[in-house]
Image (cartoon, rainbow, N blue to C red):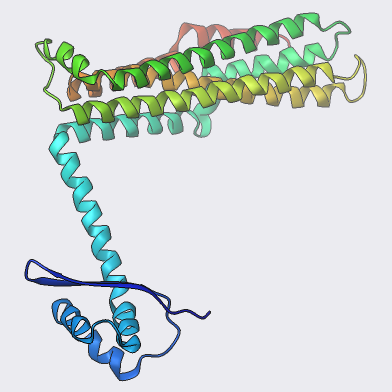
Length: 316
């Protein structure tokens, strides 16, 4: 690779000299680089000013020996600014509440999908019924009932995807009237005082949650189209390939249901996130309630027991 000094700026301000360079270097610098490497930044900048930035070995030596240090300096400065802005607009309790929210959401999702627990959920029971449905479909000559059932599922996914788009648009509109929203919440006796910047950051985070939900619903809706194609391409009843094709269609419908469930879970946690606009403790309490409700519905609900009873007594 060949290269040369791209640009250089020498300046001295407020009694402290600063020297900034960006360069592409290929030549060894010898004694020049070793001497400059041992100099302090202010002395180094003064040396560069003295040389008037005309001597190419000096420019390359300064770039090579201090470009990395300057990069680290600017990275640390950026981190400091971000930390300062966060601490100025959010309290420690806000950051703890938001961290708890993220850990609870991700942790529960991993918990529900891990190991043996995944087989005891209401989603796992529905996966078995979907497989049974499509195996029965492979034995039918007329599959109008199956197409209608899939169309009903696809309608639900399309409805949620369209509703999510409206919610996202409303949240973007709320960014333009955040001052009025802050004034409205300030009348609540237990609401904390928040800055406009903090409010807008919370609103943007809520938009991110609903964007995630939209992609899950949209992908599930698209997968419903794949399932419809698989049902239309199913071999005739009694064909040797009918059972294998039904298994493929069952796996596709199970994935469709999985993404739809992820979108619904995002809705549940978005409702908990609304508590942060009022008070960080309300976010913590609402997140805990959402986790408990989801756990009860997926692992302990009467609906799950009814489905498991149907699996125990129904046809295999």
